[in-house]
Image (tube, rainbow, N blue to C red; front, side):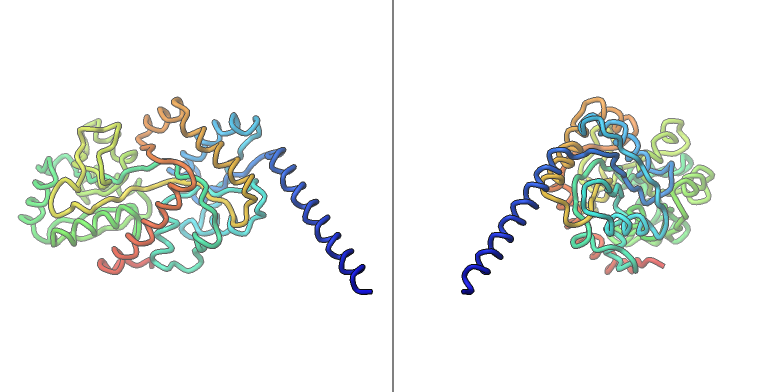
Length: 329
């Protein structure tokens, strides 16, 4: 007597499974059928916004012409926008375009930071903005070793700036200070622009900032770029050495990355389709030129590259924070 009801329940379960599976396949086949939102957790005009808007103009060509809308949601060091995407429906219509701030916040245990491994899905690493070491033109040093000697001769009298406490620029500066045992004061700014301005004015003559921020002033001769903090030289400035080429800084490898994430639980077909669209867009020679003209480096793209970068960051910044005492205030 119990066999018939049991068979009916099994039939209903199989039918439901088939129906849901068919619906998922159909959704993937028609995806996207409405505009996609790219949440940028920072104000308009900054690096993440620049990357997002360039990507948004080119991505529709890989998505059947469907538009991509950039939505700026600044606040809480990027956490407001990141949490919005973490809590969004996992349907492939809301994504996050953010930068290294996400993993630094996590490494420094900033309250309100979403769990990058459990609440977000990495979809693609996009570009890197290498952190560079720059000096005011009045500083006599033209190489990293010369600058180290200059700092030691002016023991305790010099300071360096960064774009803010706990930023990649701050970590780069502290890495050098610790490795060379330098007496040098960190001056954090609320953003890169005021740090650059005071570097130009010689108030804080040593700067750690990204190449897009430093290069225009280096071209005019007001600032001088000595080296980059990435592990290898950048393709668009091959004559600019790395800091790692000078002992004892061989392990230094810090850049500001920009990448795309979705909420957890994205259907695998939708995830694969969006990742493929981003990867194809980033492989476009015109897109690559547009980024490199803005001093952004393109190395690896895709979800695997983004996941690897997350793992590297969480370990690296966690260790640096422990040894340097860097904390988010």
